[in-house]
Image 1 (tube, rainbow, N blue to C red):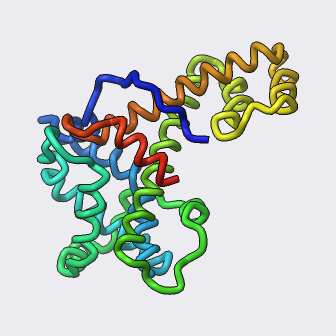
Image 2 (image 1 turned 60 degrees about the vertical axis):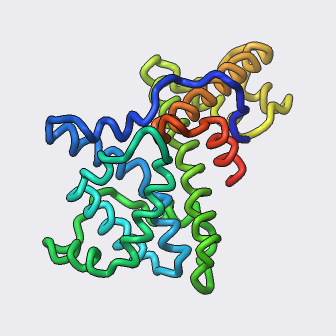
Length: 243
């Protein structure tokens, strides 16, 4: 169950990109590496949808991310007054795959460098059956956007898990997190109430608060990846429609 859309949004934008513009090289590098860890999954899904094997898709992703880290100014130079990181990343990766010279150069500089740890089993579970033949460009873009949307929701849930754990509420979060994607049937509420030693009505209120927090976390994640002129509500609606 995707988070409901409401009209209060965090007021930060493009922060993921702005961190790559820090003057300190180590800070810039850390920001780029964080970005790579956050959004490798849509790249992998796109490469697989093109008909690449698991091994070739992983090679392509690692090669592109290595290329991106070596030329981080491309990411840092993105204009916050317009555009979406999602669209820029897809175009850049598509061009990288087409430009064999870039791929060859990435390999020549010491072989493949693993920028992120890719869990193939997890990655494959999120893209379904492999295509019998390469998909159309339209289908490829849809696959990328769907996986991007899933990644945004996953990162929002990971943020909530982290904040609840730090607040000593890991058990409560574990019991309530299924309600972010499922309904609030009476049996499920009763079961959670017994697990948490809470009244069913209290559990319902806790679920409602968690869903509100989830929505805010999703919006924060979206706003980190869109420019100043992008309508966040439209991006929210579009990503939800991709699921």
